[in-house]
Image 1 (cartoon, protein in one colour):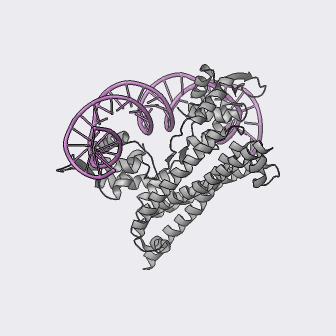
Image 2 (tube, each protein chain N blue to C red; image 1 turned 120 degrees about the vertical axis):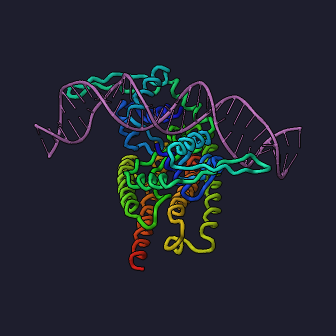
Length: 189
Length: 189
DNA sequence: GCAGCCATGTAAGAGGTTACATGATTGA
DNA sequence: TCAATCATGTAACCTCTTACATGGCTGC
């Protein structure tokens, strides 16, 4: 039931089309939720039917037309009500951790490859977050923004995303070192 | 398709009953996946039908009997094959972040309550992880364990869980300070 | 000329959540 | 006596993923 609210929260930042939202959600630019484009299109339909968002067709000459969505007053009220309800505990689904849990110390090659991939992925996400942050800060420093910046919610969730990927980068580095050291020890001893 | 593998990975650490696994997964003691007990019972059934795990009934006098599950050789092979396939990117579902994204700076009361709750939750999880860690380390220090500890996979995933909650605690503290400071400034100015 | 982006969707199936059901034992 | 723990499940429902479909434009 909560992708609806994630969509409302994303649209609260300003109107967007399904495609634009999909980029944020599918690629995972949304650090607070993840979803595929198909889900978005379907839930946007429903949100519109429920009167929580309204659509406006923007005609484009050299590109397909797009439907741009805005949160209605009813949608804003729903968001506020959602904010007051108790939150479900966060849920994580991380295949890499599942694999690592069951790693065979005598054959870590696949895991070393997977950890390298994860490291690259986290670096890419962090780079994306950093760009967005520069745009939001617009020259100010973090303390200043936290005191008086306009979009405090988005900044704080972005901060969570950055801290998370920074942590991942440090951790994945330790994982790589640990697995390669153990392999070296084994072939040397 | 991957709760199956999470279950196999969990059972690779040693046999367990559905109820025992449920505690790890439902409470979220499994820092790498989350699932409800109902899912576990259903998927354990399927894993058994597919010959990836085998069940053994343990009769108990003062408690209901339980079915204890073990990974079969076929299950171990499936786990290895899973380890070699590319991992899906991690997925996050965090309602608190959704709420925070859309916070109204003029009425942060609900969000301050939610952040306080999250802080307490992360502290609780960290305390649980720390206990488990003490048991695994058994007097050794982390460097030593990373070099030569028996259960390197489980230690590394536990490490990820600890780092994640430590990060959450620091971040949630910043969120609380930010929201309360802004409120004070507003009522003072 | 081909890959990739913009833009939206349908349909089928797998995965996940919530509510309900049972029943003895243990500790406050 | 009341709540919690141990222990396992069914049924109904909702959500999410994957595969498929379309078609013009942009950049290499």
